[in-house]
Length: 534
Ligand code: PLP
Image (cartoon, rainbow, N blue to C red; front, side, top):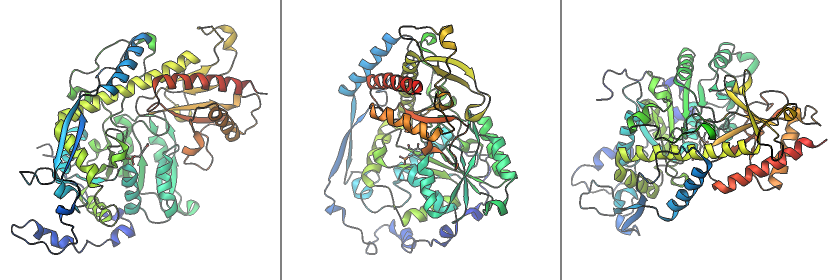
């Protein structure tokens, strides 16, 4: 038993919001214990007869778990072109496995449409629940014994439910100073405010967190000390930062000391790409000998250090299966799971039965090992994309390695991007006098590269970084390349971590490889012209 010898979650029900406390158990719930009884004639609920469901069977062609190779590491650019061909080839020659879900299976306990398309429990399909329970125990290893999984309709829904369940109007939520804007958009209309915590190269700073909490002044802020944190610890959106277990432990301990819950929004967990190695130094190899070894190299979840049950982990199938299935799950203590389930009963109910059925049949077919194999290869695919875009940036600009000592990247090796003379592959003395146009830290996870623009090196800089950031953004958009402007991600009133800097977030998750290369060339042309402006 993987939960043997672990403590049980402590009672943290004082964190529940007034709205959550006011939720009554659904009156129909009392009927449920009779539902499964043999011979019971169900005449209580308004359930349509499955005979009227216009699907007698759902079938799908699912990709096989080893559709993508495990290694993305290539030593030369010609190997990249081989990989593009492979990528294109995979699209046309996908190897599939046939999946079917009948309405009425021979064994009524098998996945079936009569049940999965029916009104169901907000908990979700029992077959899916079982898969998730096993997955969480084996992969995230919660440090307490009675963690519970509960499905939701993706992390956007999961976080919204957290806000409703743990926040009262006027409360504050601890967030990183740069954060995912939709998380703040879920809180804002309820008068729940972000409280920005400084970041460094690993994401949220533990020293910064301690300072915010220990110096909290209710009078000055007109707010009680926040009791909830929202954090994206892997492939942080937008900075791309990934937090190691030591930092997680420090943050967790501070949260225990100040009684703060941690909502761990972790959609990029399996897109851990490892350190970036320059093209010329890269060698081809399979990184891990086994799935176990692979899993043990992933940054551990906050769950693995959570001995009290104060972490509400949000997992999503959006980045590992597809965003359109609108499916994910909470892992949390049983008291919170019960309240979140009650909330589900009056909002989404169970996520859509079609999506749940298809994801479930695929995972049943793949099995735990197959799913881990899929995730492992997905990590390699994103590593390939991350390497590719950084290589393109390295071809377009002169990237000079530097070490950052302050701001959101303190403690990181940073690349500063300088202009490169046409036809000049090496950085020469003449160009050394130029100032960098932007800096970046190669992300080790996720989908994003966060560019810090050195707008104070712009000839007409006049403490107007927001205007310059948008001017460059418009120039770039006019030239046909869309990045996300930095101001969108600011949790603070003023949006710069350092005066004179602007930011762009570029994603490498979706564009075709050749389009990415063209986009970086366009970016090069536009930003050079921009920095020449007087
Ligand atoms: N949380 C973060 C940090 C994200 O970056 C995203 C998507 O970009 C989401 C949540 C949305 O996830 P979902 O599709 O599961 O709602």
